[in-house]
Image 1: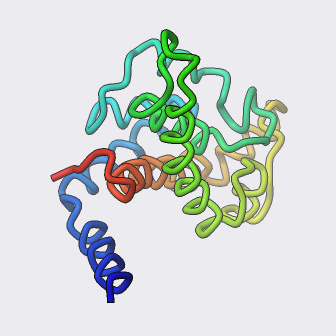
Image 2: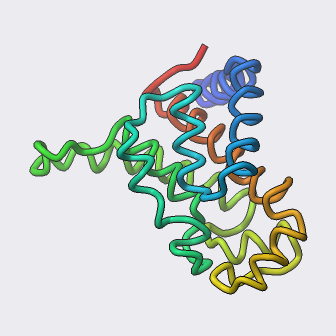
Length: 183
């Protein structure tokens, strides 16, 4: 009975997070990634423009995480940027490095975010997400392959949607973990 109530409450929360806020965040995430590229930075920028207090230095620090980390195709930049956003909210401050409770507080929403990526894409690797959504992966560090990625819609509706979804998922996991609520 209690589990059923908790599941219904979770579904209610997910359905009732302000749909206007969801639409705004999704649209902004799509636009930022299409305009600027740099998936990790675009997740952080979008969330800073719409829902979270993310310092400019944090957005800057995500520059090298694009396209799986310096365009290597490894850990998805949208995933990395979303983890950074969660860490901005519940992460361990520099002056509290001896306090391990912050690590646990960050791990729960981080794992939930990871699971959302796994449920949607089956991976958190950039190259594998590209394959899932585009039918092939690209060597983003190769100028010719980068041109193909762009010609195939990578910054039209493909990776832009990954960024937009990651932004929404950050808010969802923060709500699911009772860390923040968005009306």
